[in-house]
Image (cartoon, rainbow, N blue to C red; front, side):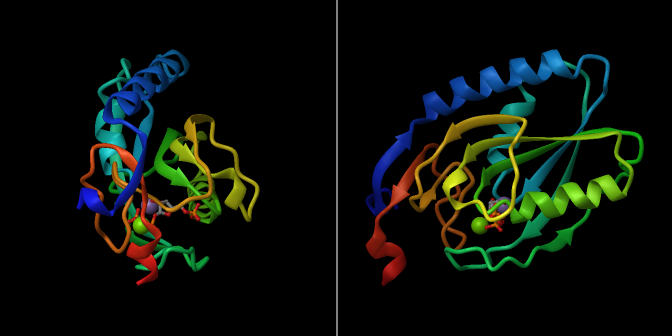
Length: 179
Ligand code: PRP
Ligand code: MN
Ligand code: MG
């Protein structure tokens, strides 16, 4: 599995240090707000687990499963809710946890859904941001790392459902997805 990786972009340790910083910022901003922290499955599962450990204020968690990519390397532009939230968001402060923002389509759709359900506020924390690939205007409130326009996998991010379990983020060798 590791032999399919061309380069490690950020190590396990670098990712954890960044998550600690993000957690400190979010803790300062959400004191007394009891935010509902929403994990966007599947990609954000690992980031979610590590991030909430670093947020030092009372909060609740929930999960949404959304897919726009299927098994392709490029976004189809079609966002589908596969699993919805278990709790209502009306009157709640929402923090959406995403692994990566690429075109921005997934998040702009989700933000729209949550605002129409009358959330009090909606913010976004993204561990990785690829602004070069944006097709809709969208800036996360909290960003971990800005990435180059390369096909990255690991730390929750997949190619054809594989590599999500890598503890680091790396660039996939082109021959893996072009063959
Ligand atoms: C990936 C990633 C983000 C989204 C970003 O999810 O985890 O959720 O794409 O792309 P966008 O900004 O162009 O919408 P994917 O749809 O592959 O589902 P997954 O999380 O289950 O892998
Ligand atoms: Mn995703
Ligand atoms: Mg995916």
